[in-house]
Length: 344
Ligand code: KG4
Ligand code: ZN
Image 1 (cartoon, helix red, strand yellow):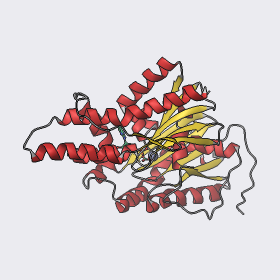
Image 2: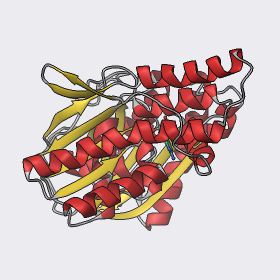
Image 3: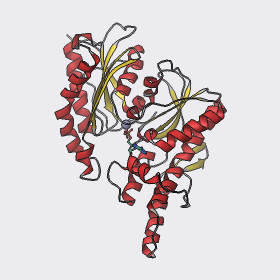
Image 4: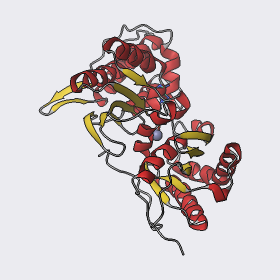
């Protein structure tokens, strides 16, 4: 008989499972130590359609989840009977895709009679920093930028954070993907914009995405994306050529500089000594360089997750799972997947 009353161990072995978008991932941690991380991606299949097709993602997860988990256990040198908890992304994401990982995790937890931990994907991105620094402790300020969220967060304890600034409209990753389309770059957009920007110059005038509101400051990526679109259209309509590399470089700077500025300014203002980053856009080379430089200049310690732990992976889900495990936040087996979960 499955129960949701479990004893909390000091260094549990946690299996993490992630299937919210086009990555099917599994990972194993023991305490804060990462033992294995396996990622299968349907991105090359999705690229044929210019973006993620939910049905293709769900089918790919169905085919890959068993193998991803088996490989993660094997690489970790862990038997099923060693697992103390199963942490899985229950949202936000594509519903059908989430259901594959969640159903698998429920069955696994039930069969092993271990706790099921339902992880909010975005908290997983936040927890990725723990994989890079086993000694990391709150408080810290995080620059969080993915395909669905963009925010500067103040993590006060292992389970609590405050949103200092977030986006009104599009997320930064979404803007990268839309600008990639404007520049006729293939999916996935972000890394391709980065590549094109490498040889470009910051010469195209674009608006800032940091806007003031009555409560302080927020980000807006919709205007920035439209400004890129208008610039390219106007040039084309006038029969003038434009340098795509310069557009990519100028956009990248306009999208990232305000995020870096707000993050480091927040750390200084609040007297928080440590800064972290997370989410797919934190894989961006320009973001990583400028955040490193800004933190060094401000005397702040920067904990930057490895690139493979910025984009979707299950190691971050296991890492967040550990925090929830320690807090005794176990899920019931009837928990459902959620396509949307508010950031806070
Ligand atoms: O965190 P993530 O893998 O998935 C979500 O939870 O959304 O983020 C995906 C987003 C996509 O919009 C992708 O274009 C962007 O992260 N991204 C990048 C880079 N790598 C991924 N954006 C800019 N530069 C990159 N190198
Ligand atoms: Zn993600």
